[in-house]
Length: 145
Ligand code: 5GP
Ligand code: ZN
Image 1 (cartoon, protein in one colour):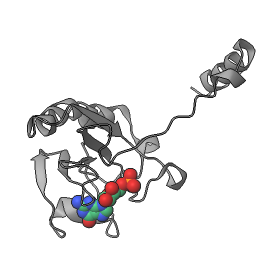
Image 2 (cartoon, rainbow, N blue to C red; image 1 turned 90 degrees about the horizontal axis):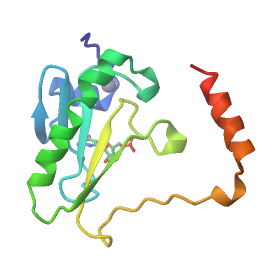
Image 3 (cartoon, rainbow, N blue to C red; image 1 turned 60 degrees about the horizontal axis):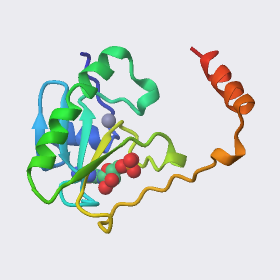
Image 4 (cartoon, rainbow, N blue to C red; image 1 turned 180 degrees about the horizontal axis):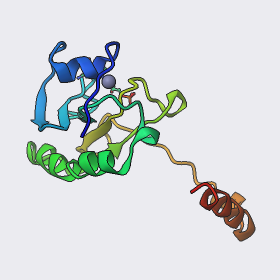
């Protein structure tokens, strides 16, 4: 895998060791470290060790390299505390989608109870869609490949 860095990127600085981080896993291509916000205890970020702004910029090789490590890292984070009963895997792309650091990253958010400090809201809009509408959307997306 090719590695290149963006001098102005905070996660590239973390990769190079210019900014300290609490690393939980590292190999030649992937790094996992504690998210400074600790949304819930153990909140971890998984990043490629090359500057990629977001998911849209991944090629298959990079995806294989990064995604392949996520389950193993998720298991290790889960295992650190027996009170962790679930985990959200989150990847924000674009400001509108709450991305604030433009070096692609995957959040592992350990879940303890439904009253812990993580929330996610999906509105159920299914009543507004019929088969024709869903088919039209699916066909438009299919045409983009
Ligand atoms: P995003 O909002 O882009 O999906 O997530 C960016 C995350 O990076 C945030 O959860 C934020 O807490 C975390 N973060 C920002 N700066 C730093 C930093 O310097 N060190 C660490 N460990 N995390 C950071
Ligand atoms: Zn970067």
